[in-house]
Structure formats: C-alpha cells, structure tokens
Length: 268
Image 1 (cartoon, helix red, strand yellow):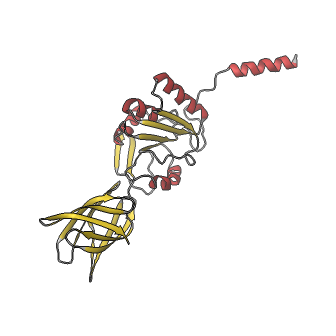
Image 2 (cartoon, helix red, strand yellow):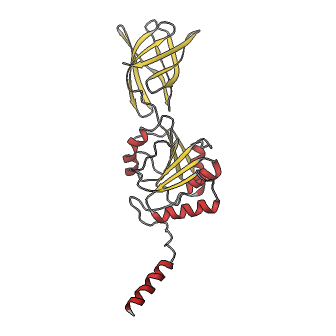
Image 3 (tube, helix red, strand yellow):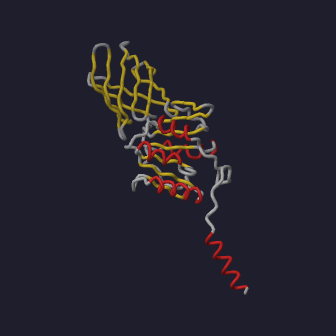
C-alpha cells in the first residue's frame, strides 16, 4: 500500500501544472518586477529598433521587451533570463503569437556568462550594482550599439538621452569607439600633427602638438564611431574635422576657411 501511495503521489505531482511566476518573487540577483508595456514601447522606440537589429534583453523576465521587439518592430530578439519559470512563460507567449522561427529566442542563463556581443540593441532593467558589473562588457561592444535601460542608470556613465513615461525614466547610451591615446593626423593640404586624446566614455578632450604650441580640441563629439573636433592651428586658422573611427585608424573630411579636403589619423 505504501508503494502504491507513493506512486499515486508522484503521478499527481507530475500532473500538476508548473507554478506561475509572481510579481515580486526573488530571483538570482533581483526580484522580478515587469516593465510596464508603455515603457517597453518607449525603450524600443528610443533605441530606434528596426528589422535589421538584434535586440538582447539582459534579465528578460517574462520576455515582454524581446517579444515586442520581434512582433512590433520585426527585429531578431533574444532574452536572457535565469528563472526557468519566466523563460517558460515567454516561450509560451511566443508560441501563442506564432512568431516566425529564428526571430525570437529565450535563453535560460546568467547575463554575466552568456555571449551577447552581436547585439545591436541591449535592454536593461537591473539594479545599479549589476549594471556596474556589466559596464565593462557593454563598453567592449561594437561602437554604435544602443543600450537602453528602464529606471536605473549605469553608474558613472552619463546617458546620451533621457526620456520619461510618466515618472519612469528611460535611459539611452550609444557605445563609443575607443579614441584615447596618441594619434598622427595628416590631411590632404599637407598638415601633419600629433594629437593626444583623453577619453571618458563618450566624452573626450585633447590637444594638437605644434612647435611651441599645444592647441586644445574644441567642439568635440563622439557618437558611436562618428567623431568631430576642431582646433586652431599654429597660423591661427580654425580647422574643423568630421569622420569615422575604424578599427585601426580614423578618417574623414576637414574644412579650414574656404578649403576642404580629407584627413586620416593613425595611432602612434
């Protein structure tokens, strides 16, 4: 009888549906509080998501951000979530919506261990201490990657844009190229000058080294791999540069007075 009773209990246990996740339940690093749908939509619109994007949500919860990215914006979308119950909820919803194969993936995993380097948009709703741990990984992503966070800022990294949905903040960062260090800049009108750059996230400053003069950079801008700056040369002419930061050099166009041309810069 004892054996029969145990078999019956096991059968009943197998027949019971899995417990549904509850708002406020404890997780690995945070409790689960879902992002309201209007905030989800604003996050995706702030990041300017299109069908060309790969959107990855770190700590995806029930998958609502990546489901919306796939369904409403046509993007390829991946959620990374530690809780198996929430992963199951997201997968059931994707099946109900009949999302095309390959457009939606829900990964049960640790955001600090999974590889998300090919994302073009990263969604976040994590505590600041987690964002601080993720910051080095985010900064190593491809320049121009958009990072969008609900409610919490990445410590010490000022956002490029802040939006509000009621009282809820939506923060956007664009991963900047690495421009820190020494460069040798040459231009098509014969200029050759060393430029030294100091960088803090997307902000940078520096100077062009002329004989007896260090000309400070002005009008500096770095948005992804798009760069702009200017300096007054040793003849007193204002030189304005715009261009792109590539893996091994920078290049673009310049203007000084009525003269325009091209420039390149290589690391020294």
